[in-house]
Length: 299
Image: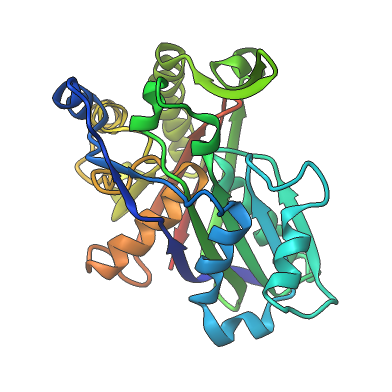
């Protein structure tokens, strides 16, 4: 028994356009024109609910919810339990929250794949949702990068193998490079961009090349390479380091949507006709932890 991605839906709040004297300089580095910011009365579960509803009748068959977030409504209970009730799904359901960031979609996909291949579950709803904006104040330049968002991916059992091998890497010694910590009793987001940039440019190409070597593939075997949409400058440098024209870039009007960036990119690429079913795709998420995950799929 195997698993495959069935459908991907997502929800983005309204655009928040920037007003800054240094905007041109910021845009040249980020490649982002505007970000998406939730309404004051919304949180990750509200955004996730809107994304999930786009699946309509397919939700009736869901027997598992995996909810990837680092900005939950509560420390407890889990967001997946609350979402089960909000969607009015059956109660004989497996629910799990994963505290992962920009590599979270790959981690969640690996859990979904394992559950289905082991015969424990059949239809998984993988939700990625974060609202970093509530931790980023007006003086923090990271507001020019991160967007609030939610994605909802249905993974189901398949007679043919469509989700392939996984590879992971973690360097917890650099965990403070991206962090939400209490500063004067207020939780605030901070990022040491130079450390994240160095980690990404060193470890992403290295780990992708190791993955290709291990599974005896060439990079041009893949129709598209879907990397976490961190920023324009990171994607451009990774494209250069990987020496590939197939690195997908879809950040200008969306921003960095953390764990949702890969599923949103895949959905948009398919909608635009840039990929189709049975194309070989390489996925790599990287960031908070610092961590990264790699896999390959066919839709």
